[in-house]
Structure formats: structure tokens, C-alpha cells
Amino acid sequence: MAARRSRKNRHWRTRHDEGHALRLEIGDLARAAAEPGWTRLEVRRAQVGPYARTTLTRDGREIAAEGLDEPFQRLRELSYRADSGTWFTCELAFSAGSRGYTGRVDSSAPPFEDVPAPAALAELTTFPRAETPGWLLAALPTAVPIGMPTTYGEHYDRRHNPWGDDRSDRRPPPPPPIHGDVAYVPAAAMTCRDFGQGDEHRRRVVFLAESADDESEHLYVLGYEEVYWVARHGIRGTGEGVRSITLDGTALRLELTPEAADALGTETTFEARLEVPPETIAELCAALGAVLGPIAQAPELIGF
Image (tube, rainbow, N blue to C red; front, side, top):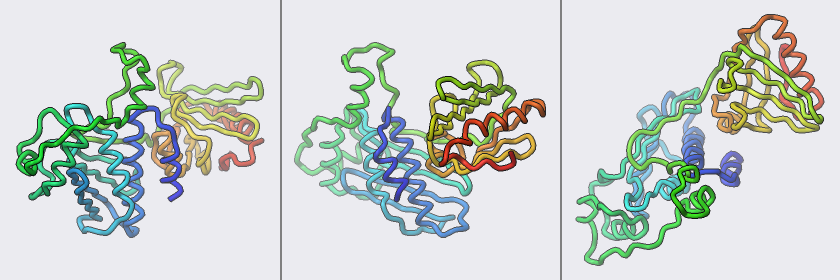
């Protein structure tokens, strides 16, 4: 539950980012409900208005799970697009040993054989759309739905474009998809051919990169007073949850909590493969020790 609280309290920059975090949360809830030893978990959410069904299968056998309603409901809201509505079905699959997921969302096919009339009315009232599928129209009662103003994701859009104009550099990233495939493949490793370090104003930093090119992938380890920060590309990062950093020959291995891995966009074990001379590896070890050594809650250094 601690992981769910941390994600809920986080301030997301875009609807896309929050939607990704919700899919990760759904995966964590599915893992918590499954007994150890599973290979594949599949979650299917079908919803029209407030009428919803959620099924979780563990290697093809349906099992019970709790807490899935709230993240799926929020995901539907974030995915809403004016005049296009939102998805009716969302299917997500999770494989053992990975933080990744694959899946599909659908905004046109009927999610149930029989759709209750009140659910159809609530759907078109809450999520109005320009073109309504025939099966949803057929399920409507005699009352005509009244479209309500929607504010799903409005604060994200306003943050990116406070003037409400069409400036291309102010447009927010697209919301989560309502139709088609979804996938997330966390990084498991990178190859490092460049190394550097710095120390300025008591801020110490070590970085590894695929090459000296500024556009290549980077891994940063920073330290300042009693705080550390590990980041990739200089943007995605975490100041907690890095359990250990191990030097194993020519590999630097980071062991991460699920939350830290998600913040970095990696698996819980991330490996930096060092294609540098032995003397550079020795220099790297000394630099990491200087950055993390003074920090009480720093990751454990192993093999240094």
C-alpha cells in the first residue's frame, strides 16, 4: 500500500505520465493478489458508465483481487478525449520478472453482451462523444443524454498552454490512448564507453554514458550533503529506493525497489556494462565512493 500512496501523492507533469503510473499500479495490485510462482498475469477491465467488470487471471486461472476499481476509473477519466469519448475495455498483461506490460484498449466494441440502460445513459452524459457506437445507442433508455462539461486532465492542459492558443510549443503531450495497443518495456542494461565526474559547490556527480555524444544515454549518480540522486538522461530519477550498487568485473549493477525502478524507467535490476579500460573502472569506483560515502542513507556499495 505504501507504493500506492506515493504514486497518488505525486504531482504528474502530464496525463500520459499519470496514465503510465496507473498501469504500473494496476500491475502491482495484480502481483499482490497472485500467489508466488506465476508466469503471466492478465487483467481485463470492461466498463460502461458506472457498470464495470474486472477479471484477473493467473496463468489462465481467474483469481480475486482488490483495489483495482479506483485506478481503472481514473485511467478512463485521464484517457477521455473531447468528441471521441474514452475506452470501454482495457486489457493489460504482466510477465514474471519484469516491470513492463503489454495490452490493448478499445473504444468501439461492446464490452458486455447486454449493457444496462442506466449505464449507457451515464456513459454518454459523463463522457460525451460525437459518434456513438450503434450498440450503445441501442442500449439507451428513452431519455436523451445531456452532455456535461468535462474537466478530465484540464489542469495538465492548462499548465502546458495557459493562454489557450494553438502554439505548437505549448501543446501538452497526448493523453493515454483510447484505442489500440499499449506497451512499456523497461530498460535492463546500457553499455558505457564514457565516464566523467565533477565536484562544485559541495555537489558531487559521477556519470556514465554510451558515448561522448550529448544525445547518448546517460546514468548519473549525484550527492549533496545528506542526499543522493540517481538519474537516467538527466531527467528521470530517484532519491530513494536504490538498495545497492555492485561492481562485478566489468558490470555495475543497481538493485532497485519497484518504485525506484519505475521512476528510472528500468527493471529492478539495471546493469551498466563497462567498456572502458581497467584504470577507468578503478577511477569510477573511487569517484562513486566519494559521492556516496558521506551519505548515511546511500545505497550499499558492493565489490568496491
